[in-house]
Length: 228
Image (cartoon, rainbow, N blue to C red; front, side, top):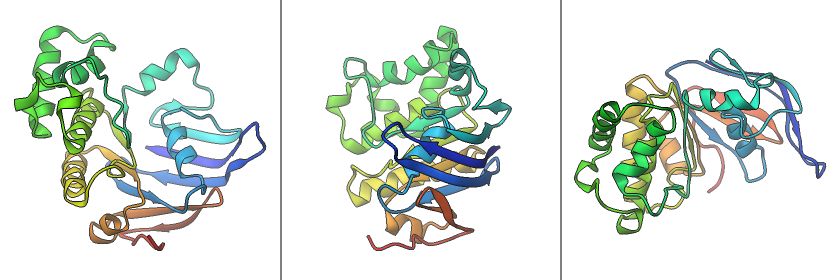
């Protein structure tokens, strides 16, 4: 499903963030991406949804060759790859319903399809009763649930969660983790970059440890492996 081969990424300031990285992630996996700050995790994650392009090497997501992919085709890739951010990135002037619906509107879905699907995903994340509320009327955990609903509304094959519990208290973080597990159980590949050692150690999945721009450890049902 996702394959990186001999990937390098060097930024204009001379920093090499990814340094000969090779990895394959199959459809339906749940993968944690861990490692110290500055190890290359963010660059690794961003290359999957083509926010960054490698300096050298190959990156493939499904049928998409991300190195050769033209800019005008990137929106088609992102219909298959949903992204959830640490800081939610909700549109403050739109309601919960409108934030989620927007993801479908931009790809041209019809209003009936949008209404049905938006209510489905808001039901899944437990916020169907808050469709008319605005982001500033929600807790941090609720905002993250809206962000997840928005990310999965077009039924992506891959969900990227970049520090999804980073701004949340422990109890709320576990609720988000349960939701990501449910999404994965429905067949979506989940790739979660995290510093939350408690979650990684207690809910075991494949662990990719990134250090110095390489995969230093690739472990099935692995632990976090760093002091936190």
